[in-house]
Image 1 (cartoon, one colour):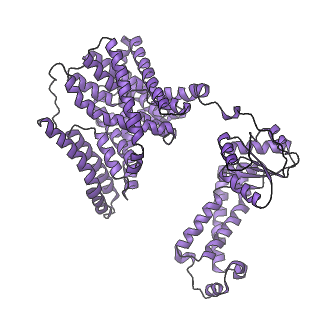
Image 2: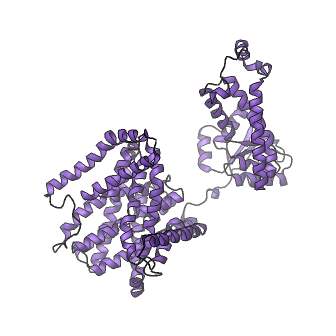
Image 3: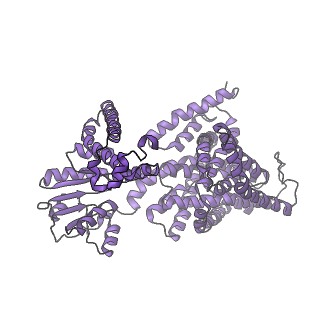
Length: 631
């Protein structure tokens, strides 16, 4: 009964995604591979639940890529894009040109005509924006050098699709097959097409700046969330239609619109409204790619297809790695960059179809290459995992702890383990009070930098018992544990308990759960690094709301005293979820009662040390704004 019902099709797609993606995520394979596997299973080559409709759905699902570029544009301010111009034009431009030339040369050697070789080279030089950005986002790598370089190259590739579509008709050796799709450009002469294209781009920039913002402001005043969401979708769809009609990439057009609106006051609302549609349509796109894999063709020529897929990804990866070295990327980042972009992108489906239509490629060759493209996309999450698990540990940057620990020639009453921004504040305070410390840190770059600044810091991993002993832990009085790794902090606590029971330990906790672990390990001097900053912000917020400064300070002081008093009790309940929730609720209610009771009957004499007499008189007379009125 497949294909007969929209609801049946929706049921199949949703069920495949809901079952496959969580399993893939649980196995550490990532959501993209989960979608691809789901598509392959329900596609015509395996279960046949979606038949040939998968190809039709892909055209619709490509809209997920369009929405993704719009959201990316919203995240990029024009100034940031300008700063990336060298990477976009330099690294991105070189990648497309060099890869296209190399692959075209190989296609020529394989017996293709120069026109077909050129079309194959250009098409296979592109990578998958959808897969790469989704995967790097999931792994939190977008802010790294590899992530930024990948984004720059993908952006250039999306732009490069436009001249490629313009070049393909010039490569045709025979009249093109009639296209069923007619655009506004079809009947225009060449010069007029150029004018229309430039006008469309200018229209997006001008409308985004002077029309869209007032329009969104007007719609927002209706306070109808569904209309705002509809307006956001209308904007993206309208740009996509306009770009399609003038022969440009819809993804590029929506990206441009996103950049124009990046400084808009409605940026966050647009992102939150588009995000759910983008996620679902991207998932649908990946399912369609999985369903489009022609397993029958692969079974007929398995060795040829395998050789083409692996050879293609190797060549692309090699070119990318060489360019990364040229642009001075580190080994780890360069490997991640080269592996992430080694597949072929979704635009290949469009370009190969166009090349066949223009009689540049034979249908048989195009069919084989489409299978190669789909398989290269499906392999990408696995290849990235191979890079993380196998390549990087062997050929990536060697661990820093190969550097031998420094010899320590002094023994002081205080040892500081880990000396980043948190511990540096503590160390400076102790030094200002004439207390000499022995500082240990295992980040060699930081040690070198601090030494240049005139600070005495020893390189070495303080979690090693022998290094602590060399630093005089047997005779020191205090050990300050300040690594930014909670597990390392806890491990050092256990080491100290076992070998240096004479030391009093003060430990840094990154957050409340980390504090619970340290307290349950027996420590009583635990310092959450975000607590004081949060309280300072809370004090400022209360003051901005009209509360007197001394009352805000006192409320924070009561909060801190209560929080520290109940912390140990909550730590004991932390392992029992139900008991912990009950204890948190009980103590939160108690804190509210404490602050409100203090507000009702303040003990002003207690504040004499930090309040002027005049102010206390004002308070007694009630000439201030209390918390109730501030709310």
